[in-house]
Length: 311
Image: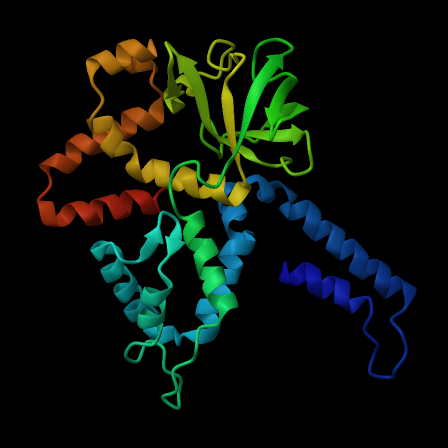
């Protein structure tokens, strides 16, 4: 991004002699910018790039980088974790408790500058942190729910008609690739501007009068039966940064879910263990190994596994 911006700026710069850059130099700069775009164009679809390019991540990062000394970030993080464990960090799910944030921000040396002055956290700074915290929650509270009205072929891969906010609309999903999980890999390619680029993060279906969520294991098969769409299905769509974080959170929590999986759960899913996909089998294996570890080393083992997540 810095290289691309620099390339764009060079086209407007003057030389030391005060003469505008030659047409040849301008063309070279333009060609270099296009080459950079071509080189990195394939990376914008990766979950990691979605997180790094997130306006919410960048805004929160600027707040931390601009108001906290680098050698105090660890101390600040410890204070946040203490409030998190006490249940006081959030005033409601996904919403930070401003009183706690002020207390953490202005405590000890974590918030003091070189002159010992503790900077005030502005409304804009708090909002940036609050938006970032909402990004890091789990569930569908940051998603848009579209109810399926009809489908050309009855599968997710063809044109759909959905209802959102009382309005009917045509939608088409495209496959974002294996870098994403079996659900989030499906992304809106055609539809209203507000929905373009959003990823599928939850798939709700009414079965026997109750609403259930389709599992990642079901979708991992990626066949016509797995991608079958029914009238009344609710497709929860999230922005790319949110979908990317949910991929990370799901990977981290999957061993907990896998350890609770029972034989009757497999029968409901109509999938034998051998067909549950590599990610669930890996999670089940890790859960078994974790139970054999001393309790004091389990957190480290989970962090090691999380660090190896292929973003």
